[in-house]
Structure formats: structure tokens, C-alpha cells
Amino acid sequence: MRKIYLYLAIFIFFSCNREDINKDNLNDGNYVTLKESKSIADSLQQFILHRKAKASTGVNKSSNTVLEKEIVGSDGTIVMRIFNYTDGGFIILAADRRANPVLAYSDETSFSSDTVPLATDAWLNDTKLEIDAIKARGTQGTNVAAILLKKAKYTQLLSGNMVSAIKTKAAGGNVAKPPPPKCEDSEYVKGPLLTTNWDQIGGYNNYMPAKSCTPFYCNGKAFTGCVATAMAQVMRYHQYPTTFNYSIMPSSVPNYSDVSAGANEISKLMWLAADAVG
Image (cartoon, rainbow, N blue to C red; front, side):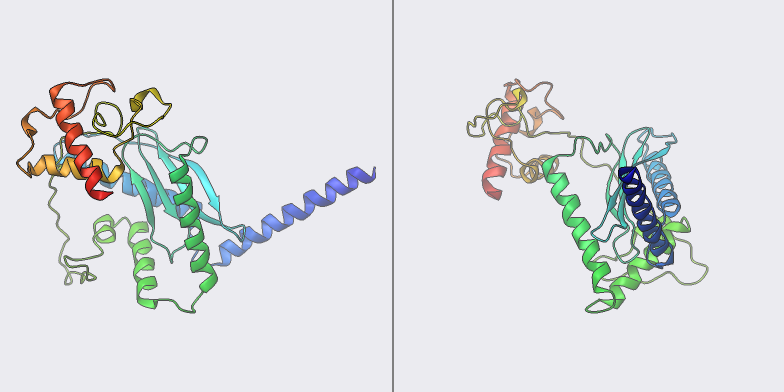
């Protein structure tokens, strides 16, 4: 009987504690509710799909938003939310108005909280600590102008003004001035410019040094690396420098064991890019 009372007391304690945390969230003017986060996630997805349709990529669909995970900070309150889109893609949003609203976005694949890569898990933890620090600082040592700008982003996002919310900086990095009264925002969609979809694995890493890696798709060689992979695709787009045969480089390599002339030419470019970035 004593054990039953003990368990009941523990249950009541944690229930009350959780209730207090929820009340604190509601009383915090910087807290972004689940309803607000979902509204932003929905609006941004529709905005991106609309821009893709204008770019003539054949995109004309709708997608539902599903909450994947809420990440809790050191004080027990929610600091981030991860949403998946049913037709592919995900978005990670901050739950505090003093942080940047959109922390990450992808229009492909989905985010699985069961299989988070180590690098992604480390980034999520670092971001959580950053938001914790913002909350702990309060008004001390805070860049007030930057905080006001971030809060303005939330206001724009929640009102559905995606263009203004995303275009927060002008060329040169200065904060963009708002348009004069009665002036409508306009936008020009260019791209996507790259047609390549290169990876870091076998078929792309044919010239990389040998490593005792176990996944079959790495060819027993080192991966090319994220920076080198991105850098090589930009170089292929501009076809510079001219010392490579870009014309035989395919948009993607069909399999990890490909050692064709095109795959090897990509691999050579990747290897030199990786060597340059260290």
C-alpha cells in the first residue's frame, strides 16, 4: 500500500510540474505555441511549392504537415519543433521568438527521430544550447535590434507574408528597408541552376584514398566530403577551370561501382576539391 501511495505522489508531482511548465510557456511572450509553429510550417511549405510551380518545375501539389518531434531545453520547456511533410520534406522551427524562426528546411526526404545521424544530432544539441542561452540571457548582453528583427519575422510568418519574412536582408548584408506604402512586393524566380545530383560515395570517390570503411557503398575509400561535393558541382556548372572534361560528367552516377570515364572524371574533380579544402 505504501508503494502505491509513493507512486501516486510521484505521478502527481510530475503532473503538476509539467502543468507549471506549460503555464510558464503560455505566460512567456517569446514562446511560440504548437498551433503557431504548425501555421508557419504550413504556410512556408505552400510558399515553396508555389515558387517551384512558377519556376516551371512541374510542381503543383499540396502537402500535409505532421509533427515529428518537440525538443525540450534545459528548463524543461520546448525550444524546437520538427515537422514532416507527407509528400516529402521537413522543417525545423524554433519555439522562441528571439531565435531565428526557420532553423532547417528540406523539400526532399523526411526527418526520422529514430535514426538521426551523429552530425545532425550534434547540430540539434548545439542549436538547443543556443536557444537555452538566449532564454537565460534575457535582456542582458542582448542585441536589441537583432531580437526585434527576429520577432518581426515571426509576425510576418504568422500573417502569411512569406516574401517579406524571407527577404530580411538586402545585397551586402544590410537589413532591407520596407517598401513604401501601397507598394507591393515582387519577386523573380530563377533556377534551379544546377542539374547535378552528386553524392560522396562510390562512383564519386574513385580517386579518394583507401579507408577500411564497412558500408558497401563507400568502395573501401574515403567519402569525398560535403564541402568538396558542393564545390565540385558549382565548378561543373561554371565549367571552370577548363582542365576537366565537363562534357562527359553525368548529372548522377547510376551505381556505387561505376568506374566509367564520366564517373572517373567526376571523381578526379571531387578528389582535387577535397584536397583543396583539406
